Image 1: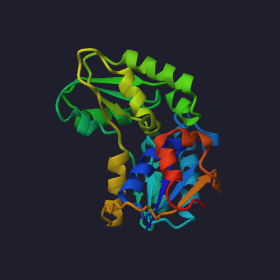
Image 2: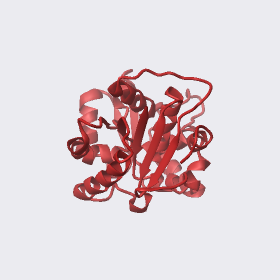
Image 3: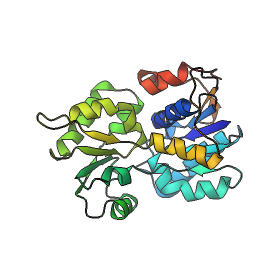
Image 4: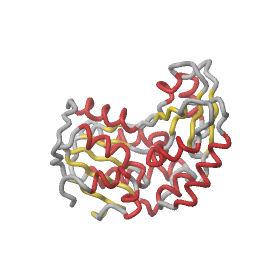
Length: 261
């Protein structure tokens, strides 16, 4: 089994690590083009063009499924990706975990890029899955870029700024950008409030990895001995995992198992 994941940058690491845990025998292809990021501020047509290039690079290695591990690409390019690649290659998009976060009816916050915050796409998900729930949309300028380049000081500043915009009574937060899941522990720490229970964070990595297996007709098969390979494509060319990726637990997990091409 070969599963490809695509993103502008290293935001795909969270879903790739989940896939590795679910199917340690799966061969993984990570396709990104960090030289063109961030995609969020770009126009929809440009995003479609960039996403198609990254996806086609992965498709050349003949994976069994492609995970679009990027909220921006899922918002703007998913129909074009499916039109270009399906039915031969199943394409699985990423949806922010608003539905499970809102299930209790308690107030929630959605941390997302400025381009996604307030977008018709996100507002549509809120109307569909969180109708009647108190929702605060929190823009996080610069956070994805800071995570991409492992800029510790910039991560701290961006997380602190977003935490300051999150109402004190909110104890459930949706991580609406795949990059953010790589610093979930720092987000939780920034949102810790004396006298309040710990914040509950909802990401999309686990759900999208499980959905990819369902689309492929496979079941989770965890094992103690990972055997799958890892192929990294940067701008369509094979490369090692970026050094910045190895600063995160997910990147170290992927480097430490299987063969790396």
